[in-house]
Length: 183
Figure 1 (cartoon, rainbow, N blue to C red):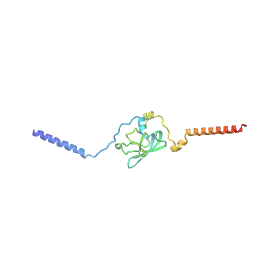
Figure 2: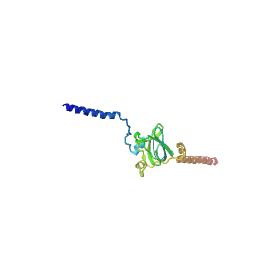
Figure 3: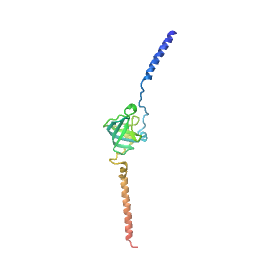
Figure 4: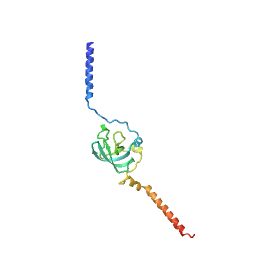
């Protein structure tokens, strides 16, 4: 009986010492997120969805600022280039971009700027990419124009102006021909 007590005591001490190592271990954090939904679901949740080539990566105190040359747009942009933020490493859910590579980016609004990470559908663009197939053609960025300038120069606006001029000419013709007729 005495041997049983001493074995039980020694086992308890070993267990206590073993667990004490966990108590003094530094706290570690890892990225944890729910798997993203379909391309359509993630486009709905995102502030911007586009494909583009990484032209520059700059480090700052919070992570990285990644500059893209935009190639196709599905949501939220019109410019030829955009900067997107991401955390510095994957443990903080940061996405690791490589300069010169092309990506499909699903970005969210983070206090007025765009950000992305591992918990989005952002990924390296591949040939016959299933997201491109699902999202459709998208549109090209507007070169060198602000969104307001692009709207002013749109084909719909030009057609409206032509129709307006034709209507005005028709009215002038009608007035001119009715003024020539004797009463």
